[in-house]
Image 1: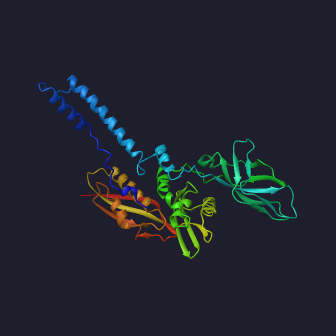
Image 2: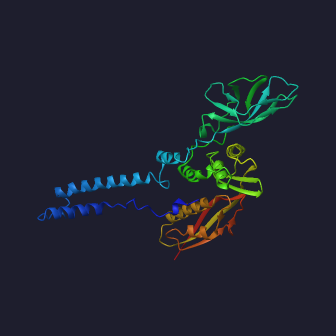
Image 3: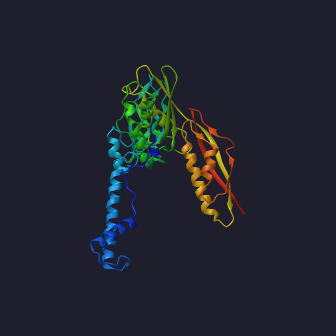
Length: 375
């Protein structure tokens, strides 16, 4: 996939400068009025009028720049990006639904098993919250309850995190099913998909049109399953077997059960998965490391802004390496720590490059920067 950030800047987007526009207007006025000599007098009425005109031209040409960028995938944002992504059939993902563990109980033990279907909906006593069962739940013969997982569909996303309604009521009652009890707080809800994630999926979307099961097609459907997914990698360890590794964008990087289940459902759809493929979905193993850098800063230079910039750059470098199979290279971290004002960098940690396999992802646990003033 083409890295859009590495493409040359589009020629249609101009570099604008107010002073240049103003000067050209003054020169044109001097041509039209040979006897006018007040170009250097800022208080002259003609100069003031041209300054207003130059400012208005600057705004207009900047608007042209913004309109041109709004139709380019690399630069479009917000609703402009939504419109561009719609062309290959990609829609911004809503926030991932929060999930919570529950216990589904029968009114009495039965002599045969009872199956509660996936999608069965429940709501709290106030009617303000609604959830649905993620997977089929089977209560064995002779038992009165079984554990399951519900996902909150109202409200959707991060707003449901922390919810604990206790008892839930069926929207459509089922025979013999008596009650649903929440056994833990709801978690895992997220905000809607970011521009960066939507842009990457829109670029990847044409791969999904293939019916032969290429890796990038599986990757598109995997990343479309949950707005919290930061990366997905696809491999085939043996003929007919497909393995999808998922990395979460949330703190810690570990994919939870709800995320993995959504990916399984997305990639195993009969219209997406070739009949002969057997697909497994696993979470990426996290390779944690600490970033610790010691800076030498010349005496007399204010250390606080230098340290802040070095820390920001180190965090950005670590974030760029946070992907499946990524490498947190010492050389890249040292280069990142060389912010303006730094004379020398000693990278204390990691002691060597952190190289992840195709089942792993490197994750910086924290960034620490110390310094000493040197002559």
